[in-house]
Image 1 (tube, rainbow, N blue to C red):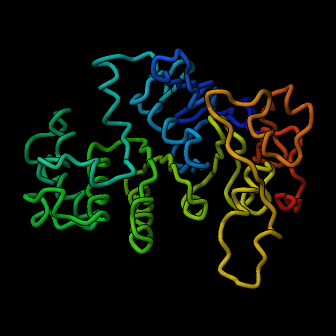
Image 2 (cartoon, rainbow, N blue to C red):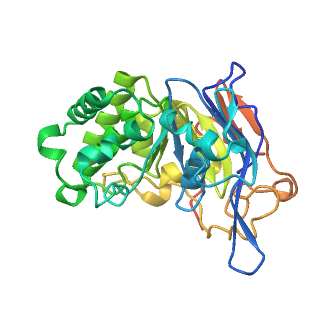
Image 3 (cartoon, rainbow, N blue to C red):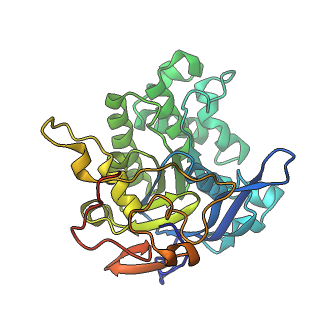
Length: 339
């Protein structure tokens, strides 16, 4: 049951904090607007990896791009340290780019096909005049070697000469070259083969440790998110549902939607009856006209009149486990089988 509230925010401050963020897009000439992100508050502590999961279209990537200010917020704040990025424009905003980088879903299309790999990785260093010519060349060699790409062989070549996994390694090298504090990883492995996914995930962990990075890891693959995240936040239709550490969230989800997502993970055992694991039916409501109160209530097996009237607020149901739901699941409680 997606809702609002700030009970889950750290009282000690955070490196990155999103507060009451709203991102709307116009729908043609109809005058209507879609709220892709609808009043979300979340924080990211220095040195952690925050996993962000949910169905396709729930607003995960829009939130990531709004943090980067690629999608401008309609309302709310994005605080990076002591700076509210939503208030910056022009040159002031550009100055934040070296410290806040992004890795995109499609590694091939995110690289300029006309430029050579060495120039692509070096571009941020040249734009921001970080170091002298020799130190920039040395930095390019360093980051390419760290991501497992031979700098001598790769630098004169163009992106189309590399595989998807190699292009994603180049994208990671480009992102860390300016020594950022935070990297937004927008589904960085979803376009890659399973065997390559594991290599890229291990590489991101290595880079995080080597360069002291803070990561926001966006994905729809819950197994991937569990393995890389220190905390996991679940989104539904532009709202936050649940925030917890991955072990607690995966073992004992408190939100019916989170439980439904986990029940949908395939089990490689032919003796397991999928219907016995529970789930939810129905279609995702239109974001043009989301349900009143709780946005998940039209698909929730536990919905009551209160869910239609009042939007749930974030509450702590267990230590460091927060959920926006009027009827959170008890420990061990399962969803009924969908009708």
